[in-house]
Image (cartoon, rainbow, N blue to C red; front, side, top):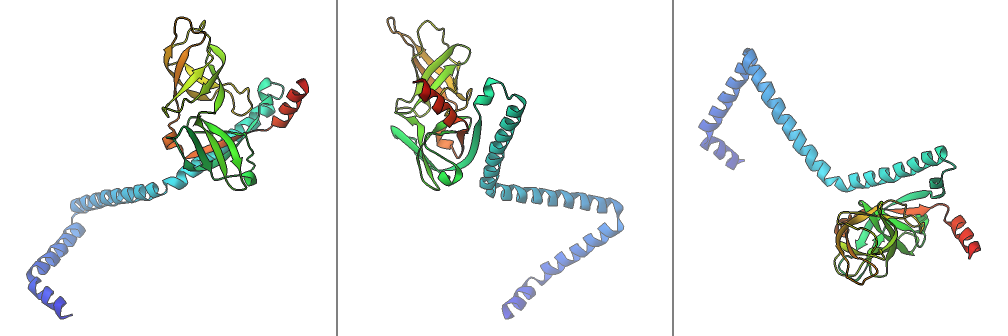
Length: 269
């Protein structure tokens, strides 16, 4: 307490000046409409700026929850869209390829290995089964491999054993995407016959033939094209639309009529 009184006594002149200036300012604001308007406009601007900054900081720390909510809404909207589409196009071919989307978060992801895997935070309890497609970001991610009650390990598209049926938009109906194990941004596009005219920038899409991925999901764009004199197929590199270093939220795609499809295909064999 003694230190406080010594401090006040030492700075008594400065404190008195500040108090008098504050009193003068209050009197001026109260008795002058012009100064009162300037004061309230300035204070509102300052308060608004402070609240905006505070809100931005709060939202920054809520990005995880916001992203999760957006991912859930995205999956829900896709399911709603497909339900509406099927109810209005019951006899069209597309209705035979109905997919249900299950939202999930990536909790582990390898990118720099030759055979990369992801782990997601849902499992059999959520309806996940082996060999379901996984999409995320803007393209495909991989296929479910090991499923426990609460978790699932996914074979990444960046896995040398992963082969995905694909199509080159408006040009080639069927080819195959496979990773060489080198560059996580590039994959090989196999079995494209030389009689097609292929150009850099062509879109590579999923076919939907396997029942694992919905059709027409963008896999990537053709990055380079090479054709030797006597080769029957092109040597093509595709730049992936997805950056696997940034995959956070994904959706497991469930082909609802997979059992019916497998049954009739087995009958035909």
